[in-house]
Image (cartoon, rainbow, N blue to C red; front, side, top):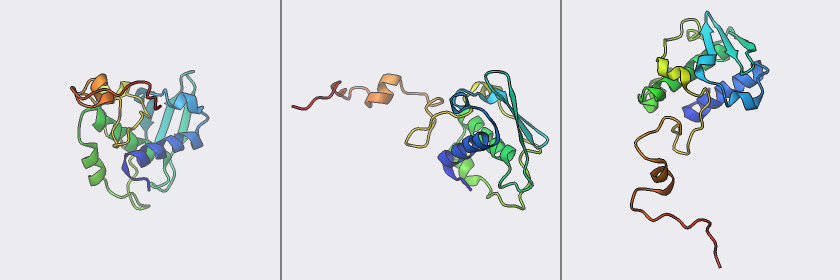
Length: 156
């Protein structure tokens, strides 16, 4: 089972790639509002308006809609500034005997609907899109007052 933020995101991304015909370029532009999960079926609407259906599998470990529900729950926690690390730590191990999360998905915050379905993740395991508190200049060049590197860097 995929673990951690990278593993969960990649598992959801691979689920869509394997079970739909959505081109990779469109997957990066999908938002959460285009993903609808109900009664064990996930429906994703691409940017052309075409609906792609992912059916549930008998085993919750292999179930595509369950994977998407778990990923959407992580995105919702990130948007609401909840602890994703705690959510991942407290997550139950999914086995063949687990219940299907896609049969009764938990509701998500309305703000999450506008979020990217597959946001980039930085090297520290956080999403670039939802971090705040530091300006773009500070985020890329260290803390305020720290000297900026010379651009471009040339050695002679």
